[in-house]
Image (cartoon, rainbow, N blue to C red; front, side):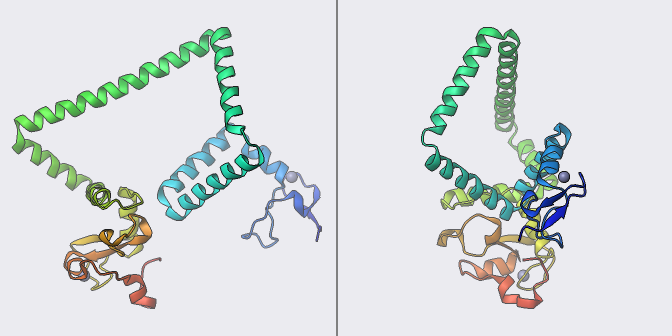
Length: 251
Ligand SMILES: [Zn+2]
Ligand SMILES: [Zn+2]
């Protein structure tokens, strides 16, 4: 079982348990040993790249997101079991650190204050802008509607996501989607109605309707044209399965 494997980075011959499992590699383990990979990943630039990639993936990929949440939940549960009181200890440590820094490190206090000032400035700016927009729309409803129309035209997916989110909130449906999800569902389904093949007047349909307890998650969404969507109404039909092998998207 413990055959010796060579690391392509440090060239050492090591036992297989010194490598990460990697199903994509034909030898079943990573080409770099754990120590080499750990060292590589600890470099600030690499760390930054990895975290940027994973946050992008988290946002774009529902399966990845669910895996990550499940993993984090498991980790917390395990820690709770193995080290009861770890969270309290952690908080205690953080409070101690904060107290110590506050007493001994003027730069620390200055940095925190600057951060707070920046945050409150941003919040202020946002609030002011929203109030201004409300006032403007009240005084010029015609212009306000034109602005909205222009925004919807420029951000069709975001507008759709906003509408769907509002409906999902009303139905108390679990899950959340954004413009990227809308884009991804259209792309996945080949930018066509899964029922009739139309490529125009496309809409997003909840396979299990929200009113019947369907979730507002990507895997409960499919592309239908407006007329097929209204024919389907509140029935539960997964057209991806319906099409079977003729489904041209990536399920
Ligand atoms: Zn190595
Ligand atoms: Zn259709």
